[in-house]
Length: 357
Ligand SMILES: [Zn+2]
Image 1 (tube, rainbow, N blue to C red):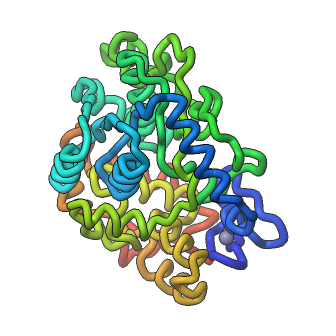
Image 2 (cartoon, protein in one colour):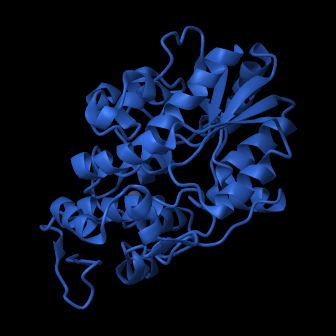
């Protein structure tokens, strides 16, 4: 495993091709962008849609910033929240807080079906959050089609901030192909679940794009203005959002507070690729010049990938109860999906294997 010369992110992430020891996210950062011209294009886009825009939202720092910013620009956002698989108390409060600024539509698919999808995701592809990631993309499109609003504004293009294949940086319109390739689907299709433990095609519609996407455009606000997570967190806090670090493996206090399963999702990422949420967050701050690379590496070795026995005040046994899985079953799955070329076992911390480099 090699780490980026600039930000310390490892090269184990899928599609994360390094050039001369530098990761794609650092290279994207060095590109010159004419942000004034981009803002002009954003205003034209909003004008073309009479300011009517759907903001896919978790109630988090980025969603809150997007809503406040679009209101400032004179737009009329409608907030669409695809409820997380296991909503946390703080997540509930932040969704309610943001609904003070614009009409909010929350969509909560059948929770019995959803718990089964979480368990299958974990067992089949090592990803508990499969249905959540699918719903983040499908739900806003479904609501847009129902309401006749044909503009959707997501936040940051994840290919930009965390790096991705070259050539996608400039993609401004999210296509079905993008959601399939990068939306966290891991090769699983909704039809793979039909008939399993009584799941019907009808149950899976919540996780599918609507049949007719004609005319609906999805963009990222991060393509039109420089994305700054810390600024977003400040604006969101001022707007009433609550922020507490969800677990010791996270570096930022203001990200991913709404899903109790997120800790386990991020821990699985650590087991598969050798980096967790904390490493991706601190790498952003290294790029911003807020943290030095050496200090970031020390923090990563002391915290990244720590097992989330509690996440945003929800204990792991509550998370497992909901998906009908025992701790022993989880331990087996964790071992099965761990890339043992990157890790070694340490009997003193059985839930947190030691990264070799
Ligand atoms: Zn880098």
